[in-house]
Length: 346
Image 1 (tube, one colour):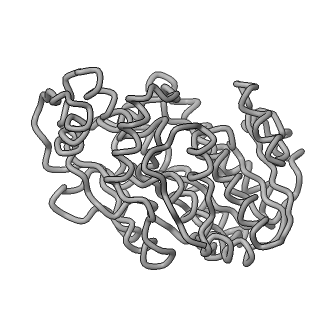
Image 2 (tube, rainbow, N blue to C red):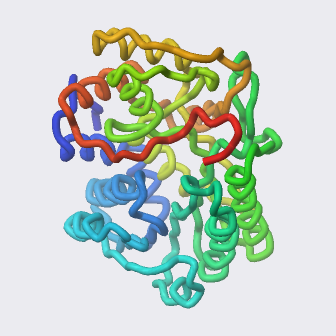
């Protein structure tokens, strides 16, 4: 299956086709993980295209399974497009233990629920979502395989002169959000060990596409001629389609205790240079404030690249796509990442 990418992305349908296009490795991984699959927290930024990639990989392999998406669906309009694709949807409160117990029994679980934005000032809900909910899920799905999303934030700040944090590094979270995410991992690890649940924990930094992500945040600041704080001077990103693919490739490698996987792009980017590139494309030289700190939240994805394949879309291509999207007034999700926060407060 050859991968051909367009010069520009003009429509949401075209964008979502790219984000959900399965690789041969994804098709093979899903052959190795038969059975129905449930995505908890499907209505987030990655869930819909991840689910669609599963459906497309199954179609390519000639296999069928139920794909079920669970969410509060606070925005009801996000539900029908999933149903139209053939994804069953279930609406409910994931913090309700009775609701969790009512969910269908399936052999494969992808856990995407969590709370980040609004965590500051609402710490108790953040901890409930990020550490209590995993216990409910493990109790319900103790006979399933679980792939759980986490974040590279659990590593803390590391020197920008290095290669970024690797899976075997000791966590050093900054702020309550990152602490609660480490708590999420520890809860999954506990139940993986005590209930013998095979798991993969995905530490993601940072998925991007044309409607949201670190590069969209920076592009908008350049396009709107805002002054850009470069104190968090370095970052790594990965095209969301590549993040989806790497996540699905990891399904057969679930283990007890959990297998850990960094999902990240291959390059450490200097924020200043990214903004200058957007400035060239927009014809608007960026304005900066602050000085690059010597450390940043940086996630080394090399292990995943070696095992599952290098990301297929490089950063230069992504920057071009995003610049065109913004200049053509493509729709945005309006969800800033706040990646520049060095205090860990979101």
